[in-house]
Amino acid sequence: MLTRTRWPYPRILAHRGGGSVAPENTLVGIRAAAGMGFAGVEIDVQLAACGTPILMHDATVDRTTDGYGDVADFSADEMRRLDAGVWFGNEYAGEHVPTLEAAVALCRATGLWMNVEIKADDAVAEETGDVVAREMARLWGDASPAPLLSSFSEEVLAAALEAVPTLPRALLVEAPPGDWRERIARLKCRAICADYRHLTAAFVAEAHASGVAVGAYTVNDPGKAVTLFEWGVEAVITDELRDIRADFLATFGLAPPGGDDAASE
Image (cartoon, rainbow, N blue to C red; front, side, top):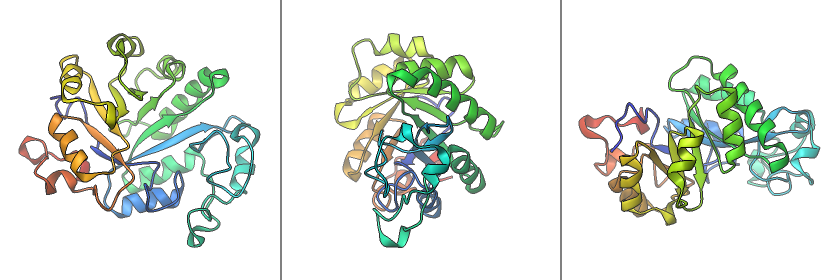
């Protein structure tokens, strides 16, 4: 298994900031994860019409705001005027769509590490990878450990590599492709992150033999999380923050040798 030195990150990450306990990709969601003791969050970032990186998963604002239309048609200021919380619950009414800058500031203030999933259509993949990588380098500074940039888009990751080669990257896939080693090598990724349903103990062992870490999404069953960690998966991304808690590894005796549990620091 890879050593802590090769994976100096939390091993349990709150999906889209607050998992199932708060509206996704919002500051209140990130605060919820921090308040529950999590050390790391996974968030989604794409560019608004003005070129500002904002937190949003979908290509449209329809599902998670009170607005309608493509994200690419809204400036960051227009995004702020949308309600990104009321869909989740009336108590969250008035929550804004945050900029990446605001999310980083909150994570830095609360001591949260970030896995930044970069989303982009093919037409703006290179621009998005370049902008987000440069912004993350500027906003995060020299704090350690550095954030992890991940994407399903190899064009995004290639642009991020060219823009800020010092920021670590992870390739997101549904299922590991046959040529995963070549893709990882070309993009100089530290990790590959796959749908947990397509991971096997054999693949995890193969990845580790190649010096590549393995992440799993979106793991909401505690029993499956135990199995994945027993296989040696470095990190799981979960919605169920109440079941797969920040102290999950220690609770099930799955912490690395010597009790070096990066997920509950």
